[in-house]
Length: 252
Image (cartoon, rainbow, N blue to C red; front, side, top):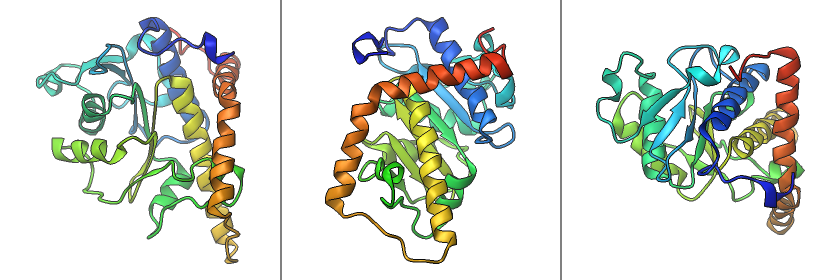
């Protein structure tokens, strides 16, 4: 798919967006990135980003369906009084993101094993030691102020503020978040963020010094990822075909 054929997420039809978000949820389970019935994905459906789709409370990612995604208004103070109210931490984090971060049309928040292990280190940064880790050079926000499970408005607002102009966030003592204008881009970023974290954890486990690239080489390598931008969309489409074979039903 060429970039000229990519449909902006603020004009894409809701059903297509629902299907993609449900697919991303199931793919997170496929890769064992989710944690029990926690963690949350969301996608804006309104031009201002404040109305968004999100997975329902405490339903396993592997069973996600397009028709069951919640429609939430980030400005609705009665959201948690609904009979189908979302998980409190989902409302806290994603409500704040869709209110405060315009470029976050899609937000994926997870506790994947390697990225979460890295988030538990004193220094949770990703060093440019190969081409995948270099993708995140100077492109990873660091949220170092974990305040417990995000059940209140203040924690969600703090998390949203930590994103700034970034699209990838390492959340110390917590997990990771990726934001993008489409589900495909956010999914591909999450995939490579967890891969980069896995590489870091494995490299640290050897006990040998890291061979960190120079800043110049790391920046040049990070920029080279832009050449493969179209691959992000192909990656997601290919993985939906895997779901069609192994775990169909997400489009229902």
